[in-house]
Image (tube, rainbow, N blue to C red):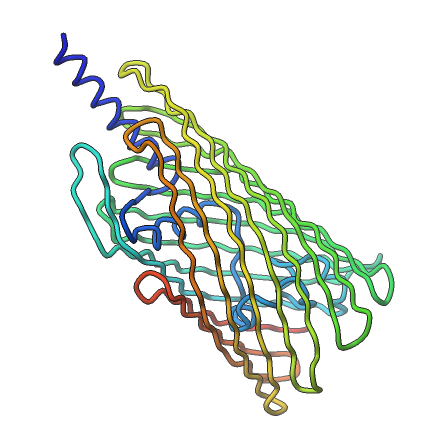
Amino acid sequence: MLMKSMSTQWLGKGLLFLGVLCLGGTSVMADEVEDFFIQHNQKRYFDFPLDARSLALGGSNIATSNDLSSVFGNPAGLGWIDSCGLSATYSRDEISGDEFLQAPGFGNFSSVEEEFDVGTVRLALPIRAGGTLGLGWYGWDSEVDDSHNTDSERKVFQAGYGARLNDCLSIGYSFSYFDDEMDTACCGDYEMDDGYRHTFGLQMRPNSCMAVGLSGFFASGDPDSRMAILGPQSADRDSWGLELGYSWQVFERTLFTTSVDYTDYELDANIVNQQVRVNQNVDEGGESWGFHAGVEQRCCNWLVARAGYHYRDNEYDFNDAGPMASLSESADYHAVSTGLGFDIHKNLRLDYGVQYRFIGDDDITNTVTATFHF
């Protein structure tokens, strides 16, 4: 009876560990594993991708932009768009670090990397009644070279509206629907097909050289997972954030942008399986602070050069009553970026941006955007 009780206890702990992996993301833990762990887990929440111009500026222009980036940025920027526009973006994103699993039947691993292929479409349509409608879609496929053969895909649909209240002030709102899936060899299937994000924005332009932007969002979803032994599991995933930005046209050809942001992440789950006496709460959450700065310089009529800086302070907590009693990690990093913009035609622009992050093993993002005005 004692052996049976101990066996059941260890089985319960092992199954709980697998349930945590599946609901929270592929959790990996070690001295430097936070480099990958935190970035990977944050991808399961409700953040948006950047276009090439914004990436090159370190993301510093999002709060104050009044172009197509406002579709997945500050929706108040849509209020300043007076003509129809369409943009298409392709991005290749890489995050990396170390992998380490500590549970019965698992060994030690290292040098894990996840690669994302991301596509984004943005559309702006001014309407006769006033204001501008912004529509967007983005999706990704990713693969992780970890011990679980993890892969994921995401589809997001976006609709927003921005309007000028007067010559100096605009407001906006956008709604986003998230469909997120992840498969792992050990944990089964994860899916969140009911993720929703609400974004509100405000922009002030007291003169032609200055802009101030403020945006905030809240988002939620109910991810589900299905495992061969534990069966169906569910959780609640929530996030909210704020961003404040400022831009200044320093000289006729020189633009300076800067912003700060804060994001809160939270996941609550209850791993249940009565046959092996598993019934434990899982509490996962984090806080992220960011500082961004960028400079854009028009070199000639057809060429624009950009450079940016991004500092990110990530704190992530993982509390589990099972095998992992408590985990609190951080993954702070500095990032530098640069890029070019080419005005091919009065109605066509091509932009390229690259960002290098001093975290993991040469984490890098390359992005190309084509923008059409009609």
